[in-house]
Amino acid sequence: MCSHYQAEKRRKLIERRFGIQLPPSWEPPPGGLHIYPTEFAPIIRRPRERDSGDEAVPDFELVEARFGLLPGFAKDAKYGVNTYNARSETVDQLASFKDAWAKARHCIVPCEAIYEPDWRTGTHVPTRFTAAANDETLGVAGLWAPWRNPATGEWEQSFAMLTINADEHPLFKEMHRPDPKRPPHMQDKRMVVILPDARYEEWLDAPAERSRDFLHRYPAERLAMKPEPLPPRTSRAKAGKVSTAAADEPPAQPSLF
Image (cartoon, rainbow, N blue to C red; front, side, top):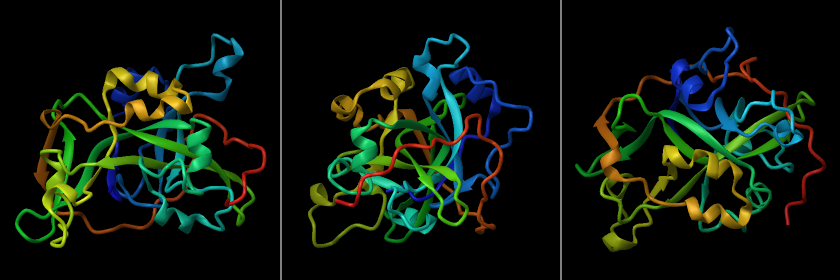
């Protein structure tokens, strides 16, 4: 599971890879770029107007969204502390995620680094995962959903990272505390779904029935990992005007069941 990551801050990399012209005022998320559940961070998705036939509409848009998917029935943003990761095995069944999954609300979460606890020494060692190539970002497959904040009446965006079993991954099988009651091949270790760069567009365009075609373990040789102490937690990141698109105002959300 991933509850902490560094958002991609390299402006030129984002603009070059996704063809997005970020406004001059755009800044990476506050809080030292260390993103935790309920905080705001950038995600990449297709613009709603892309199917209009207007050639001026870009292929991608960057929007600010809360880490932790918020379904329509969520009372407040704290709900996101339970929905920042979506298990691929149950994402189409759980009330929090099934609507976004059915509507193929796919997004990419651009990460400079992902943090996981390494337990090989018998204790928790914070470990930083990055792309092995310095000029690459880690594009994590995510689901997004619009949410109307009851406190403000305004529409916000939210997202979750998809996860898969990592019991056989050379690196991620060593992360998180092992369960001594389970054999090594049945620990149910988890890892986020990192998309190959060449499949970004496919993921964003895929219909719901093809979503599972992208749920694969990322090759270990394409990752770099090193222990890194975590910085002290700073004040929670607040929403800012870093979005390149207005929030959606969708029809009413489905009920819990």
